Length: 87
Length: 270
Ligand SMILES: Nc1ncnc2c1ncn2[C@@H]1O[C@H](COP(=O)(O)OP(=O)(O)O)[C@@H](O)[C@H]1O
Ligand SMILES: [Mg+2]
Image (cartoon, rainbow over all chains, first blue to last red; front, side, top):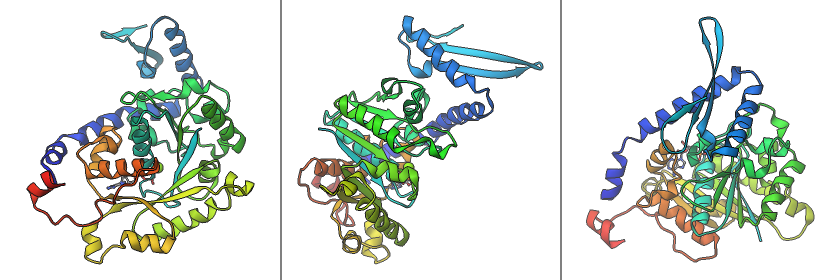
């Protein structure tokens, strides 16, 4: 093993993997139980926003939460430069 | 001219997706326009290996079913300008892909002027694997030096020469390459693992590359970076050689022998 390889290996890639998976698994589990229209809603929303702002596909997140027995639909749109804009 | 390359194997877990991602990156890094398509419907994985899992909005099946345009579904790689990913759908409907649907997408990529289309095949010999290889000009058969993998590869070679468009038309054959991966020179030397020559002798086709077994592959997938981009890694060098050979360069095989040299010699002696 070369020196560089040694140093590279000591970087904590396992935690990167865990964080990536935490996000994607949660997203996919939710998608399985969510109403059918959510993915379409997310796409259409993305398209509408893109008419005005150039955002990345992962900038729009949709969440359906249960809160005090009510369904809460939450959109999070991350704007290109600074911070998150909530609609 | 667009070249369609399928990365296939029969057996699962041998390194197809790892290989497809690295080959696609390697080609794109040479300024070729490359689209890489995940054919593993229901078990999307390429997005994780490419590190674009959070950017999937539309997938392969969406394009086929007309839910969106191809352009909307292609995910542009953030590292390499000329590289695009088409994710597999997570649908449980196994019949979501059809020959006509796949043809439509490939034709559009060809018309758009892509130089290479890399098809990451699912395991098995069922519909998904069949469709991934059907339109191929070239096949990279990924094999581990292990009995069941070698036998499955032979089945796949049989399908490549009978169940592809080229085979049916009876013209030029699909170009076949073996890519031997998870190779452990120490175990080969100890007689515990078949050598590249052994596998080549049994299957009777040329070996495009031998990729060593390495912990770098796990680090790369953890990070969502195709392993060919870990420059210092032997795996990256071996994949880079594979890309060069695909493009017609002649390069000697590396990493097939157990390194005998000392540390400094390995660092500086090459
Ligand atoms: N050269 C290698 N050294 C070590 N592990 C490898 C190597 N190539 C692939 N792997 C590991 O093998 C497993 C299967 O790889 P993958 O590319 O997903 O295979 P497939 O697409 O054929 O199912 C993964 O855990 C991957 O990290
Ligand atoms: Mg795979």
